[in-house]
Length: 344
Ligand SMILES: Cc1ncc(COP(=O)(O)O)c(C=O)c1O
Image (cartoon, rainbow, N blue to C red; front, side, top):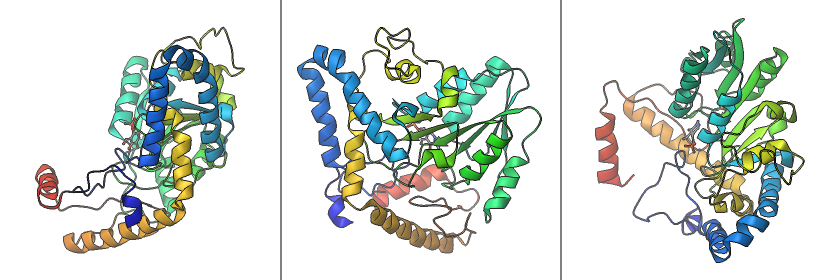
């Protein structure tokens, strides 16, 4: 892995452990990104006016194949936040309808749903999933206890942000679909960390970031939507794809792909990121990262004397993990010391 390190642009004096917020982009992928940016600058009219649609279609096909999906089920978004905002604004919610979620979700997503609830009178129900988690079935049951006659939408992370847990989303989606509930999965952390076959997971809608663990440039993410749910998704930004003069045959792609003038280079570099990981035996890299995470977790838990939040298994975490800290830890001071003394 030390040979791989030289392929990244990260400051060598820094111990960068925050791929969960912003993944590092390796040099060959970053160069591809810049090639597309230069191509745009060289001839903006030809690039954005004529070539972009075909280039995006190609980049989308490659991403869809990587996700086990069809090309017209996947559209690029700059980030999962934007994708979930589009979905949340499109769902027809009525007063008292409930969106069932967990108490492990990412803050910006919680805020998005609360905003929508304020406008519609729906309720955002954060079902507690107690720690430690030891058993997938118990986890599903704890979540499912939150389902009521008012539940309309299930919103759940594939890998959680505050606790870094891989939730059993396949089982939850299966149950949601059987119960006639719309199932939306926030997979921001999954691409690159977990092998993904989206039809098998079975979510109606699934968003993922490419700029975290897949190592694509910042501003590359996607939304997957099963064909059956595409028709009610409304464009967050209405542009030329609405009432399109040149319809592609998929209103889903037309509505969401074109959002006015913007830099498409990060999307176009996603196939290079997929290729980079394939060329560098990412299964082995992932396994090595998991082993490092396990060893570090053991040391941290031994240091604090506190209980692990889940068993040591790739079932529950892959390349990132969360550990408990003693009560009343000054988090800002800890963060500062880690940076000042260890450059973490
Ligand atoms: C679980 C989860 N969902 C969504 C997001 C949002 O990602 P972005 O800021 O790229 O939109 C994050 C970001 O860290 C996340 O951890």
